Length: 358
View (cartoon, rainbow, N blue to C red):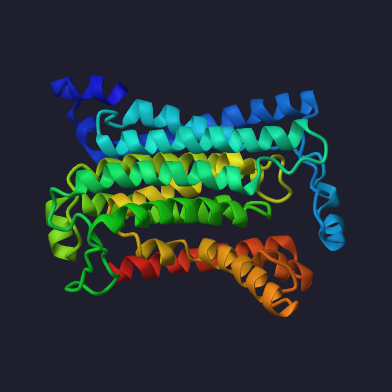
């Protein structure tokens, strides 16, 4: 809104620059997240709304997380609101990609809120059933897949998959691109959700991924940069830099309260939304496969759960002491802060490596 008003004033042409608005978006989202986060935590504590971290089958995890019991949750509302307000201020809200991301934010935000609300209000409840969540996630994935399939069909690279570091081989999946989009949306939202088990872990890795995609979206939206890097030029995708910057700023503000020892948890309200938005950005800028590297920690966390379940079902033995992966290292005696910091270091190095592969 502010962008549209400022850009109409000739003497304020600086607001037309994506780089300038990205900085403003990050700062605005950070400020909102800090202020709103403080008030939100205070209100939740007054209402005595907290997560029961002992709802687990593992006695060892109950012992490890006993001190976290009744910590306020649904902090994803803080992240979502800060991103949404900042985007409304500094993004071109008539950009079709920004609209898709806002739609994704609201869809996953509502889904996550419903799940968290059930957990908090119903005794011994585990939230929405896995089937219900998967149906809601898949529905959004298919909607986005259909929209992008018909939108991208006018470009030569429309339904092609860009393979990192391989410039001349781009397999065209045709109509199956709809399923590819749905798979990435569902997969990334669940992967970030599974990573959200230690203070600052999921939000820290999301910040790193957000920074990487801020740079990638900027390059994809410019003809000169995309030609130089030999990546698909996606007209209008540069505006996603502003969106990603807002995501980074809002997440940094939330990390202020979520770092060890956490004053608030993100809950599904935030983790599902962040994963879905990052997955969609990767799809729009035609770097779906690169997301596997940038979000390597998320992929490893989700993969550890799948491997654990499959191997246990087949052999009645476990590959990891506990899944997701961060709990495996907890069971090995690593302090929570060490796991979080080392995982974030790996995430940062993977993000740098992914930029080299562009």
